[in-house]
Image (cartoon, rainbow, N blue to C red):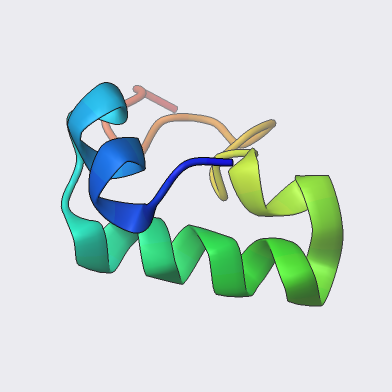
Length: 47
């Protein structure tokens, strides 16, 4: 088991972000790690 600090160092993200991901994982499971824009067209795409 890793501490929040160790996870942040290994993933090169902040400790706060580790806590957010951990909370989201408890709530919605593995879907917490999938980007929210997945499957959508880019905003900069020409029509």
